[in-house]
Image (tube, rainbow, N blue to C red; front, top):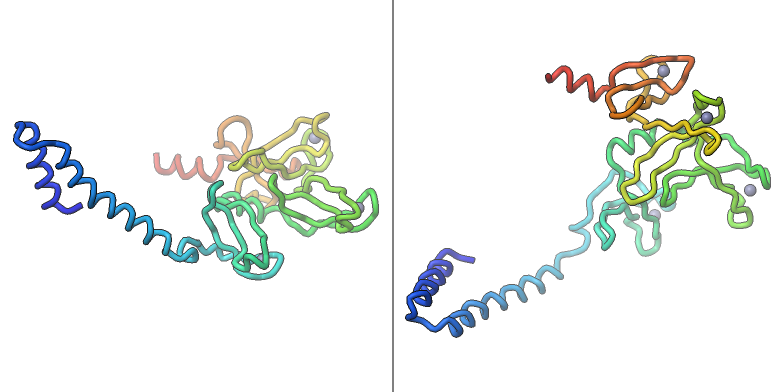
Length: 231
Ligand SMILES: [Zn+2]
Ligand SMILES: [Zn+2]
Ligand SMILES: [Zn+2]
Ligand SMILES: [Zn+2]
């Protein structure tokens, strides 16, 4: 809207208030050009090319090698392969923290299917990463991804899981769940002493501890250290 138009509009509203102008024709006069400009905007907005709405991610598609880009859809933001429609690979958008946590857990797993003995491979699904039998679709065996550290409570493997829902956080829990209820929130930094996985202890995110009992590192989370330095 331009200032002249607004000033004229205000003047006319004053006239209406003073009873000098009929309000109905005046409103029509106001809305007609307004209506037209909305229609014009709608038409032009449709002409914005789809590519300009995409954001680069610096990652490439593990299926075809094309770059992965962030798109916005009806259900929010997601990563999709630039090779669409030939390649339909999509995955959820990760925060930098989630990405760092993912990179801490190696995907080089040396496990074999307990049903058909073929090797297991890492796949990413709606609820995060998991191990799937390479014999799929004949063998549909799947299990959670081990993080390479033993459960401090019972000694079984710890596995990576993801809370359900669109913004579900990644956490580590015991593969012996529900018998063992150990669970911990991962931190995006490795242990400063041994390089293994660092988790938060107790409520809040201020205390860190190494997941490896043998290492035994405990300390403030790097974030808490920053907060203390500032305070
Ligand atoms: Zn692809
Ligand atoms: Zn199998
Ligand atoms: Zn356990
Ligand atoms: Zn450690």
